[in-house]
Length: 301
Image (tube, rainbow, N blue to C red; front, side):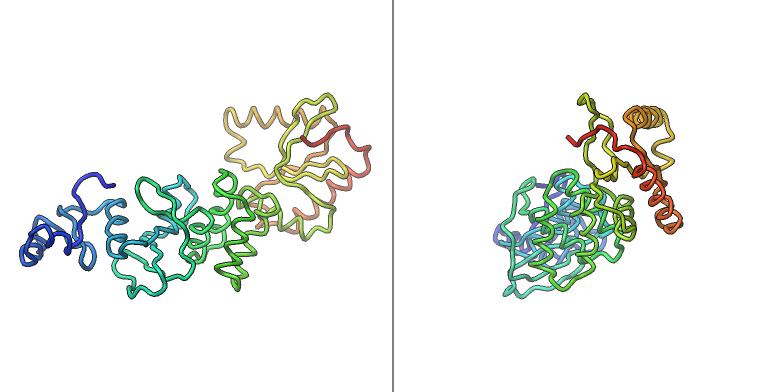
């Protein structure tokens, strides 16, 4: 499972004939081995890699333990993760073991059926996301993590909702973070837009749906869409849309909106927080402008 020096339990080394006094002597300062956790050593004296830390944590937690939280999500390839450095491991509720060093031990009566990721028993994505979210105070980090898990098709929003209900039924904070994702938001900025729309009193918006013209040609995939009047809302960051190919793509998109007769409002993500009332005024005004025009002949794909 690891590259470089192996990780081993002291008990296993003794079974192989290495005396305990030899083990501890080799783990002394300047020695050739390194003590990582109680009863677990690195057969080398360098800094352990993340893989070695995970292996050591699972050796400490013993058979039947499951990796979860941020280190589990890294194994699935997620990138928008909270800044949590320890190794989060689930163990059966009756197991007498506590957190120590770099390993966070959580005893649970809902031990998930693990998936093997590079040989490591790993919690399914919904459980790992919610386990990480419960230990993350920053709401934007929680939303970003949930949004990535859904957008990259690692899980459905409903699976996160079920996990919250099963594991954190009294945590309204997680439910509030998930609400925009259930509504279709794909990012923190879109979640801010979703919340602002909820305040607007405007008719139903759909999020990240594909719009086609009367001839069936693709127009755009707006961040927000009001099908009742054919109105699009784009939350466009200056840094992303103002550069090179992104700028050209944005101009082409806006040209397709104009050709299809669609009213579109473009909003900088930062203004959703710094000027929410001004954005609300603009959103309502743009909607009413669209409402006064004949609905364009477009449809959702």
